[in-house]
Length: 163
Image 1 (cartoon, helix red, strand yellow):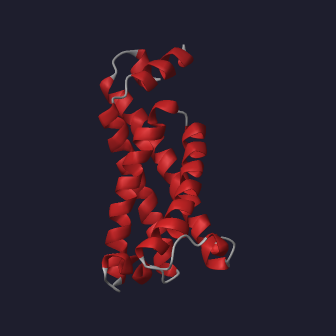
Image 2 (cartoon, helix red, strand yellow; image 1 turned 90 degrees about the horizontal axis):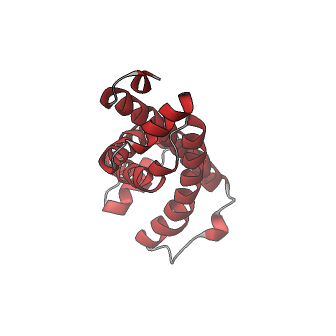
Image 3 (cartoon, rainbow, N blue to C red; image 1 turned 30 degrees about the vertical axis):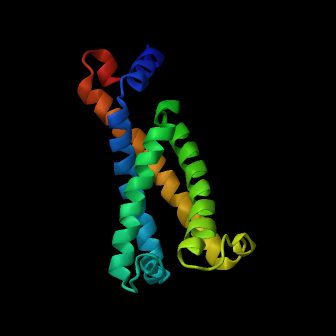
């Protein structure tokens, strides 16, 4: 019975709800990762992507990216499963992907550093960035699943909605 309810719940979530869930998860994960970056003094460097040195601008830019990246998580991974373990696993994978895409490829390109910085991957700052991205992904995935479950409970009727 629980399996049927879980199956019904995962197929009843619309694409829009998956994207909204991803945005919500991304913002919560972004808050945590943003706080970590603030403690490490990284937000001014993030702000430099948009031509600023302000930590506040860096945080706002980071949160904007967190929402967009979260939406993409909901779009890509949302249909694959709605169990907390799956959300955590896909979130960790997604965080690792964004660690490669963000600080190793996109940031160096946007900041004119001459291209990807794969040689820097195992330096202490990049390993701290990896930890931050993994935490972001983990939180994004778990919060996404929580959101989807809360939406399925609201939109469903009967025992399946309360399971």
